[in-house]
Image (cartoon, rainbow, N blue to C red; front, side, top):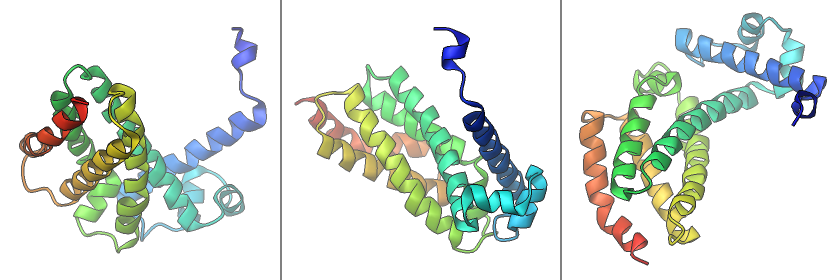
Length: 199
């Protein structure tokens, strides 16, 4: 396939660049001061665009932070999914490694750290436990039968939802080192995983 066949149209490429630039600016600001202290004017200035451009692209401050959390969760889950694929020959190991990786990645995630440090009100917490949970659960629910076709869609959704809820809970309120937590969760889910894979 030629380079011209894969090249994005200018308007699409320009919009993607604008979107990435703005979300990167949000990430920098959230790391530095938290979301509640960040205004649309701050984001526009950090991204080098006008406030009107920002509103034209995202519509509202709420939509902007949702876009930011969506990107962060999808990037995190993509790395976890690669760990699952690399260990698909052993479902127990895949679960343990993926869960531990999620917790380790979350420990450096600014959205999570802002919430853990109580530097934010309820907005980010609601978005992470609502939007973030839904996104992660959906991605993992699709990944499970891709790796293990004998698992039904309903069981994959049940397992994914349970794991993601636990993972977010442990990320926000860590009680043990990530490896210890991952081993405990893997042990707890082992009978159910064996039941699903035996079909």
